[in-house]
Each structure stands twice: as C-alpha cells, then as structure tokens.
Amino acid sequence: MLENNIKNSDLTIGIVAGTATDTRFGLNFLAARQVRGIGLSLSASPQAQTNLQALDRNALTTQLVDAIMELHRAGARAAMIYCNSLSGAVNLDQVRASSPIEVISPLDVYAELTNRYRNFGLLAANCQSCANIEREILARNNTAKVIGIGNLQIVEDIEDAVPPEAIVRQHALDDLASALVKSGVQILILGCTHFDYFYPELLRHCEGIHLFLPSERMLELLRGRLPQVA
Image 1 (tube, rainbow, N blue to C red):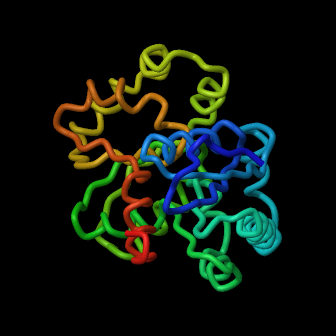
Image 2: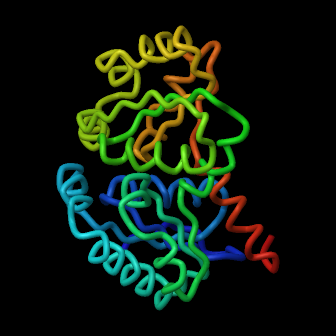
C-alpha cells in the first residue's frame, strides 16, 4: 500500500488505480491539496491494466470492492477510483452498494458535462476505455457527438518518464487538438489519469477547445458528499 506524506488532514482518501504510477499521481494530487491519501494499484503495468479490463465484469467488480475494503480498514473515509478505464469496466452501482465508504470516479464528473457540451473529443488509454466513456456520455445526452482515440503507448511513455513536451510532440497531440477544433469539438476530455502528466504542456496548444481533467471536481464532489469535512 502506498501513501502520501500528509499527516494533519481532516480526511483520508483511498486511491484505487490501475498501476503504481497513476496511484502515485492520485496521491500527489491529494498531497498538493493537503489531503492524506493511501493507495492501492490493481495492475503491474499498463498492458496488464488493459488485459485486466477483459476479465469478467463481475470478477473485476469484486476485485475493486476488495481493494476499497482494504483501504477502508487502513483508515480511508472515502475512495477515489483514479482510473478511467477501471471505472468503465466495472459495475459502479454494485461497487457503491458493496462499499462501506463513499466512492467517486471520473465518470461521475463526465456525467455533469453531458448537458453543457454536444461535441466531445476523448483521449483515453485504450479503445475499451473510449467506448465505456462514450457510452456514459450518450446515456445522458443522446445527441452528443464523440470523437475518441485510445493510445496505450502514451501511457507507457509516461510510465517510462518521457518528458511531457516530447510526448505531446511525438504523439502529435498538438495537431490532434487542432484537428478536433476543425471538427467542431468543444471539449477534449483527457480520459486517463496518467494524462495529468502532460496537461500543462498540451494546454499551451489548445486554443479554441476546452481541455478537461476530472481530478479537481472528483475531490469537490467527495467533500460535498461528506459535509462534516467540507
């Protein structure tokens, strides 16, 4: 189990993610906001994480609930599923019903966006994740248009600590943002928590399109659901 170094916090949040890297990203995100975090990862690598999503949905849901239970026993009062692909691959209703603590995922945040925008761009870790996020958007806004791309190599480059500017350049993400604007896309969702890594660099190339990460709103929603620490 991983943890950040925050000691005097009004809240301890459990982070569940695919790999140790995005678990650490989640813990760092909380630490920057002076929130204590403890974390567990379910996969050893991005490829293993992708393979994990091919498991039986019920088995993966049970695995996630077990991880949340372990975080609860370690002191977590709420849990953040810090992984888009994992969030879309499980039965979230069952996860929440089986968990003793409040659970938030990026999909909760995307649900809020569905009536604000019609044309979405989506960059995810793999096509399974793209399909799951698109399904959530269309379930709430059947007139929405989604242009989605899954690219596991970007995740692997982040795991290998390739510099953000090199990732944006090598994967032509600046050109992607420009092409999406020409296609009428209003918002580009970075549908993988790994992508926090290059957000500031890509933001410099996103004139005419809103670049969106769910992390900040996830924390706001959790605090709102726990008013005693809001």
